[in-house]
Every structure is written in structure tokens, then in C-alpha cells.
Length: 415
Image (cartoon, rainbow, N blue to C red):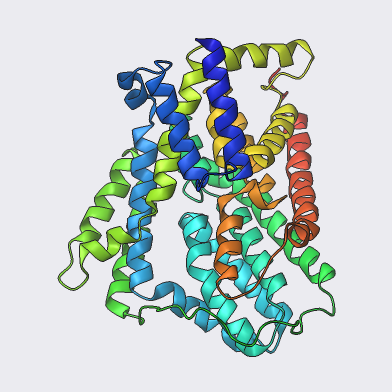
């Protein structure tokens, strides 16, 4: 039933892009889940096929990293680290630089969504109390977490998928993707400084904060356990042991605690994101099993823009990431990459992540920052985000394109 598969796919992806369905109290996760159920209930995807469509290693890796991050969050690590930079509040540009570098580094080691979830409330509270304009700092957090996460396989959900499906080496991925991410980070900082030049002072905000989070106190023992877990995990990533096995083993060890209840850790696992992932796996499988996307890619190739061309892949990834967000876009595009050409996978990782800064729906990290800030009565409009996001994205993609030209001069592009 190709027509039915296409219909379900289009409705699901449109719903994910818009974020809601008029008249229904559904968010992106709920829409994706309904799309997956429709694929199964209609017979487009058999139940056994639906289970097989879910990339279990990617889900396990994502889940394990959430558990490790929860250990650090409950140990008060994120709040403590963010608090260490508040001494720079009297020098706003230096504070912006330090907070962006911190967010980028932590996003490279842990999923950027988790970093944004933990850091946004801290930033909102200290900036409100200090009387600074929160917008450049919050936009800097979102941009830095997106850019920094592009540097590693474990930096964001789409990179985890790319690394797992493409069977990419952790070290080679880092060497290829980290340099453009660092340059893009520097550009993002300078762009924000330019846009908000003379505007770091306070704006007219409501006096009441409206939301005071209950942050866990800093626990040196629990934080040390989490940091040791990350260091061990990074070491294991450079071995031949499957990444998902290494990650879930470290997570299991962290769950074995005499003081921290496992329920508290598991409550911090983002089950919404995991459900979104599993649902989109099934939805995408519903049309790929009908060979529909392959026909689309063949049509593109006939027009002289094959996806194997790294420039074409960059453009297509950028467009799709801002139509439906970068995670669904990546899930769609990985089916057409050549496992024998790792550069295609690196380019998809960088372009889909960089593109996430363009508009609000480009990445889940943006949405997290905006929703968390709203709890503190700080509004970040679509226009305000795009004012910085468009320039940051264009600069980041320019860095990638220049890298591709350099790559092209050393090794002919796949065509």
C-alpha cells in the first residue's frame, strides 16, 4: 500500500515539523507515536517488522548516556559547574564565552539535549538576579550545545544514529568533525557579540521569577562516580568493544549505589525522546520498505544532484533538518549513505547538527532552551532566535563547505 505509507509518512513528518495537530493535545512525540501505530495497524509495517526496524544499539547507547548524565545531575555537577562561571557576570562577554565553551565541551561528551535541560534554569536564574539581558546567553547556550555536539559520535542523538549505522570509528570521527566544530563555535560567539553589542544590559522583564527549581546539592562522591564513568566510557570507545555494550555496562555500574536510589536516576531518563526515536524508526521503515525514498533519490541523481555528492548532501541535510528537525531528517537520510565512504557520514553529522541552529524547530536543544526559559518568564521569539541563528548557521555551513573544497582538492568527491 504505497499510497497509504506515503500519506502516513507525510502527515507524521508534517506534524513533527509543526509540533502539533490542530484540535488535539499532541506534541511531537505523540504525533510520531501515532504515526508508528498507524503504520502497524494499517498493515504497512508488520509488528515483527516494526520491532526489527528499531535500531536497538542506538537506543541502548542513548539510554545509557542518559543514565550517566542523570548520575551527574543528581550529584549536583551541572549546577556546580555553571555556578563556577558566575564570578564572570561582571564581564558579560567573557561570561558568554566561558558558558558557550562549557556547554560545547559537555555537549560533546554527553547528549546536548541533556546539557541544555540542566543549564538553562541555572542561566535564567543567575542572569535575572544579576540584571543582564538573558537572550544572548540563552541563544549562546543553544548554539554552543548544538555546535559542540557535532564534534563526537555521542554528542547528540542523530550523531549516535550515524555512528552506529555507519559503524564509524570514534577517534576518526572526532578528528574529522572537531576542527570545523571549533571554528564554528568561535564564529557563533563573535556573531552573538556583534548582534548584541551594547545590549547585554537588562531588558524589561517581570519582577517575579515565577519558577524556582529545586536543584540537588553538590555531592563530590556522586559527581566523581559519574566523571569516572565518563572517562572509562571514552576509553572503551577507542577499543573494538561495541559502544552500546560499553555504555550500558558503565550505566549499570552507576546504578549500583548505596545512597542514590535507582528510581531517581531512571526518572531523569528522557523517555519522550526515546519514544520519539523508536516511533520514527518505524515510520521511516514504512516507506523505505516500499522503496519510495530510493525512487526519490534516483530522481535527484537524474537531475545531476546525487546524494553521494558531499555538497548536495550538505544542502539536502540542511533543508530537511529545518523542515522536520535534524533527528527525523537524519533517520531518513542514513538509508542512502555508502558504508564504504565515511566522509558522507561525517558530512551528514556536521550539516544536520549545524543546520539545527537555523530556526527554532531545527533541533530539540533549541526547543528545550525556549521551553525552560519560558518557566522564568523569558520569551525567545522565532524572530529573535532566527536573528542570530541564521547567521550562525550560515557561518558554520560555510566552514563545512570550505572543508569539503579542501577535501575535494585532496581526494575526488564521490559521484
